[in-house]
Image (cartoon, rainbow over all chains, first blue to last red):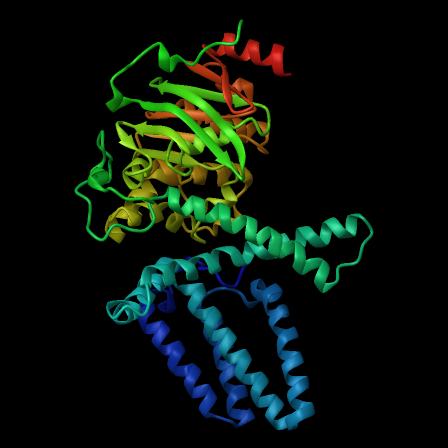
Length: 223
Length: 241
């Protein structure tokens, strides 16, 4: 199971609007950086685990994803312990764990489309002054969420292919074919998005059914 | 059967209900992929077969403006794919060979609704129509599933449903049964057979197009046979197998 994906449910967290959850995550994220006590941060991490448990998703199902996070946390904690001491390392580790778990709680209980709609609303002021295209940012986020599991599968395929030939998998052996595959996929995905009437119309159609010339027939574009 | 001239020179049906390719040529990376294609497609079921690299997928991509001709014009219901691409893409749905690359959103229901949102449907309406479309193709109950957890056949069906929900007049399918097992191949075949729309299918699966109205054989960028399935497929087997 990918931790970045919505799991259907009807608990309180599922019913909470995406905007409220996103605001809570942002607020708690800032608060976690204002606190430096490892005890308080440890308690926050435990509370975050409780929030994930409240989603109704068993923590055991997140084991694979959490194992990856644990490796990153272990490296960060070790580096901090060496550079700044154990107290600081414990605080940093607990902070990351709390943030990651809260992020999981958000994505596990929020449909991608709701998350993106909220994101588009948040970016609307920036779009009005020409600093961002909210729709494109939202689509980019959707693609990231969509292709995280795909990339993990591709990495597993590459590892398997090398293992089948008796070869070890070093970082270069993994990364280079991954980049080639991702670039190939990117072209195909861009084509598929084009084929599905992207970018969106700004005005609602009178009907989604194309007539002999379709509602958009007056469009003269050079897409 | 001798190599035949394309039918475009033989008939001139009403352009508003057909796809018309007028002396179309396509060059990709300095290599001519299609040359001098004159064609009128007005049948409800058209198959396109040919060897790998023959140009058949490029021919299919021309039909909804994914590829634009370097020479000549392609018109769909009278719409020029070069100047009216958006309207053409609404009229012609395209199902890609690899469904993995066609699924844009992580959740099945959201992916089906994506195209509907692009044409301006409100969120609630788009979701309702997506659910109905999934149910109509036996995928009800999968709306909340992560798309990457579907089987190969389910992904291919999802790709088809994502296109059909837009209610295009024509559906182009590029090798829709490649890499599918017999059961899923039959599901896709049944789905194509049940389409109300015109279906144009590029395939290596000759059985898939054996009951179509018309089959084109593409070879080295040209249409070398264009006939009823029995005759066209016999020509293909005898000359290119």
